[in-house]
Image (cartoon, helix red, strand yellow):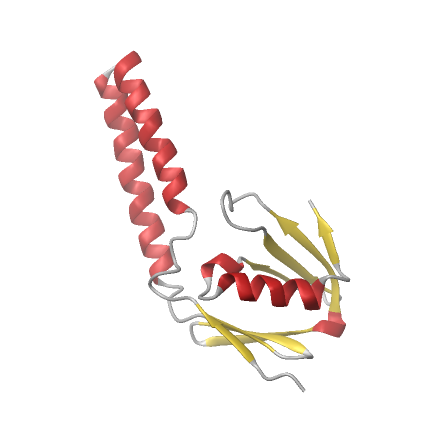
Length: 145
């Protein structure tokens, strides 16, 4: 019998792909500054600062969230709330690369009760191990987008 696997969002794992979007914004700002005007570049820089603040604030709220995987279910702890998805109630799983440019795809898990859960393994410590374990358990349900 396999033991419980636990993965946690830590201070080091909470900014997975954000830096790539900010780097693209920086490059766009430099190009706009050289070709259009410094005022337009200032507007792009302010947008970048706002985005950094939003990312920092939202990611700070996720520190300490966990996902635990057993042979029968996945248990999610988000702040004060806990939820569980049993493997036998999963209807389908889609993989989505929309927000994960460098890492692996995120999983969108849909249950027979209509509940949907988005899970990006790169947000958790040992994210690659979590991805392998999810692929092992969810391989039957996966539909690639």
